[in-house]
Length: 272
Image (cartoon, rainbow, N blue to C red; front, side, top):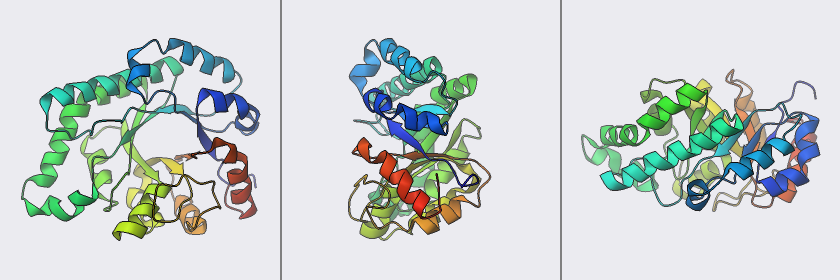
């Protein structure tokens, strides 16, 4: 058991308070979800950070946030929208700095439509990279300055390699890869993408963050681990070959399933 990976969790402040003892028992990595909304980032979020620091007294695991994503993509072509994207990413990093956070999740720009159409034009793939760089360059510099990693999470991604190439194109240790197991399983079951463990293999040691959720291959379920049909032996087998020590973050719709998720993976001999 001692050599098994330790699972962390994505929680909000309310559920962090509920699960505080569980998070501290093995110094589990934490991702706070309170900072995804524009109204929070545009308002006075300092009391939320202050509350988090009180709850995290004695916590030595890694801490980060899910960054803002509603209403935009990081490869937007609209220059006015791009200015909003740049501001949101920098606002998220302000929160990270105040928290002492070491990661912020950013959503991938790649859609199912892209999979079929990026090679329909000689310039499409390069344009995605260029527009992402325009939107993210300030955030990348800021992340470098504060020691935070921007981890790009698959959403609709059917090609597990495109997002990895995007992250590497920045040439920065502050831009790495995230995988959401349920998103990958949706893409596998509903759009013909590779299985979930192939996403891990494609990322290799660029992988620094994983959202662990169970699902059925049809929708973005965020069920407790063990309640769906993901092949967890294959996923953890692929993770076990990496040296990048990714944050393994259980991300559930119902946070009360955290302890069950950990227990189910422990029963399979995969994690603790």
